[in-house]
Length: 221
Image 1 (cartoon, helix red, strand yellow):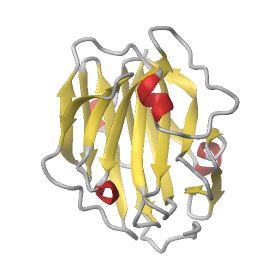
Image 2 (cartoon, rainbow, N blue to C red):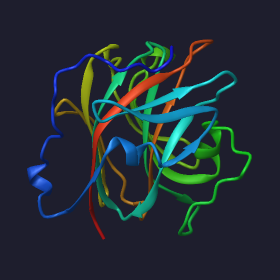
Image 3 (spheres, rainbow, N blue to C red):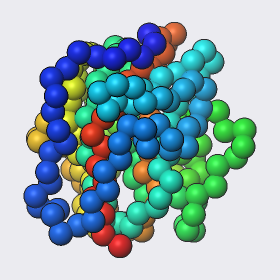
């Protein structure tokens, strides 16, 4: 399904009062659409301060990668709306080369998940996983080591904007949906930071299409 503007009420990004001493970075849709695009498909800004991220034929997942790196204290908040019921939605934190600063990506990278699970460090937050018949989970990569998983499917529906908070505060990592923490773990051997990424992937022969808006990044050095 191609991205179209969804009908929605106007809602602003929510203030993270407990992080008010952290640096705040607002990312408008035109800026988010200019993050590095990875995979086969497209990303573009549309009306209502929305950014559409969608797959094309032969896609193995599409991503938007932040131009900046962050330390091990970073919180990403945004809203997303599923245009395709087949869409898997993922956020990555601390994405970097294995055990080194920086992040290099091959020129021929096609968006496949195994690149992130097999050869790069990151925290991989999968909170919309029902199309795969699974439940939300967080892994640490490389190696796809599961840090925590939910006992039930996510229950997230198409055509509705959800508020997401994905965070890493030193060793604590978590996901909250509409203000409720749904996944939380402690990783004592903390990844020291890296890039942020948004990823969507379809299921079977159905392509993913997702709208994002009101993305805010809170961080500390």
